[in-house]
Image 1 (cartoon, rainbow, N blue to C red):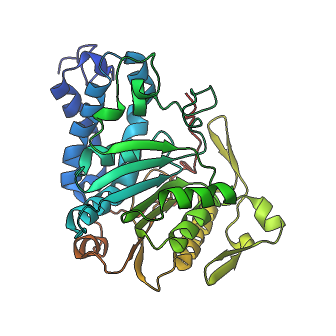
Image 2: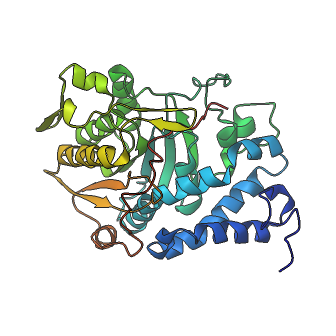
Length: 363
């Protein structure tokens, strides 16, 4: 077989030299390598076109596209959120809305907002008012981003930065809005709930890769706000040992548990994990997910905790927590209660990896 040309999708990932068809074919090939595509075949078929639409949106702004599109990062974000994306689409399409009513999606600790970007391209604008991207690293409203902020130019373009000749904000099918909130600050969370939750249409609350005690905050927000119709939580790393050393008791509604049951020492340093082996941290993580699940108020809701193998090469963060306030949506729960075909048990001999290794989002 002849060696692929230097600028071909088979050789490098310089997407700017490919046609849209070549780019989509490349992304499709990469996605179908993951066994999860067997569980969500239609969603995986549509993802390459969505990512291609992003590429078309930023055509002419090569620095922005280069900053935004890292193949491994984008595909990882999609794969690990695919079960939630599928459930949210089923919910949005199946729910009977009142006249003039629309869903509002609130994406907690969103980072650059890849999940909401997928949802914007996927969901019908006539049924979804907007996605609100919540993260403490956004700039303040109407203030230019600084070096330590997440740069929002891929969301707004010239809408908030006159130096960019493209208005990206108006190009999103479902509008995307950022909101700077520190979820560990109770006053900021209260203000957020008053602004974003009250007297709105049904809320979809999404929380993917929430580190440590941020997962507690997400459950509390769902429990406190009856307007939240649907809740998706995928916890990330464990709470730090400081909570255990203080003998803290974590409390979620009527459920409580000692912090020492779930806290774990360890950190990433120069790309390497320094801490207990995965066989230990996995058990703590599963216990953490169990406690979070028990803390979700189900007096007026249906809830489920599923293990879906989205991390297969040493990662163990495969716990997905979902809840829906009654009445439940059959098309959502019929799928959630099935066993995934692509779910493979991991090998305990795998190397430790993906234990919430931080990825810089400040650029």
